[in-house]
Length: 486
Image 1 (cartoon, one colour):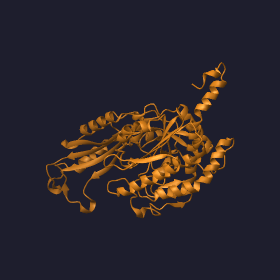
Image 2 (tube, helix red, strand yellow):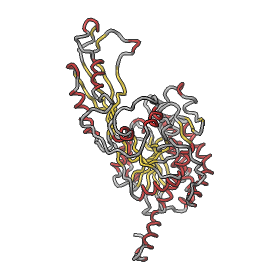
Image 3 (spheres, rainbow, N blue to C red):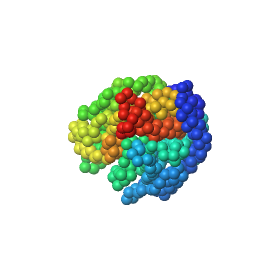
Image 4 (cartoon, one colour):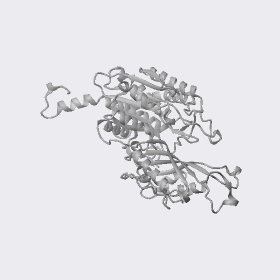
């Protein structure tokens, strides 16, 4: 959407000396950061059950080693048969702001290797991007934390006023099943005033973003039963219903002709006024250049604040093996994305009621809940948010924009529920062409360096927050110098 900006080492006009100092340190550190990232990426830490769990263990151990090298205490934790997460801590002075840094070290499967231009677990640079599974999602998130710690090492050793805790999860790509237990069992160790969740995206290359809304989700399996047993489609077709045809008819009721969700009870939130041109959306999504978008309203309202329903799977005979048969039953899996403020339970009931009410031709419909998660709406002001905005603006030379994410990140709601008083800052290294979860996932190396710089600047600002507040209080009219910093 925008041209690639100058190197982070080249300060924007009016940049502070502190920005220049940290950018210079980062430039010197980046070869090592890049090497550590590539070493992490080479570990195929796919967390799906059909893959080698030992690789996820190797990945966790590698993260422990990285964090210990930066002066943190670090160890792995595992819940039951889950994959290991990493907890780490760098204590600060008494009363220092407590900041929890989150990322995840597990990755998605690579898919068909033939779809990749280079081996999925061998990081390869092309055109300013590093291509590999997990290069962006989310091992770059881990390394952004490590890079910030690395270039602030002198300040941290000297007692920078910040208490750092880290949680690097190992099951994010499979639903974070162990996360609630980890947060409960280690609540004191992870308790914090602010959380930096490095698993999101920027608006575009050259335009930073803070994610302020996420859609919720409900995933269901719908089973349509039409007959007691299969029968010949020539003998009985035309009078007896076919379950697969009935299922297709039922799925078609979920949308109006223009693609707007037609389920009563699924709500919409107020849309952002951020402009996302339709042509840019078509290019980013891979749509044909002259195809109409589905739904109604602005592009960002459709993908951030309105519900969306997708049929993501159907049990049906393969075309090559299809027989002349009326099927007795058929199943589909539906993914519903919810407005950020709607609770998943009311959404599930609305979806279930719609499906049951629209059962075609006297068929029986069963709806089974498979997965769910609430959305998220972040605070957009406050001292920690202000520190993040200032840091991102300094790193990029342009103010960050507030964005929504159409996808769901259920673990964020877990953090919000467990630490209700904490400011939640959702950041990330991705951009519209990252292709996370797909073939040829690619990390933009310039944006990665800016994210590392922004996080270091943010932690540095937070670490000086109390002293700045004390100075401001002591210099304000009528202040009492003997009153201290409160």
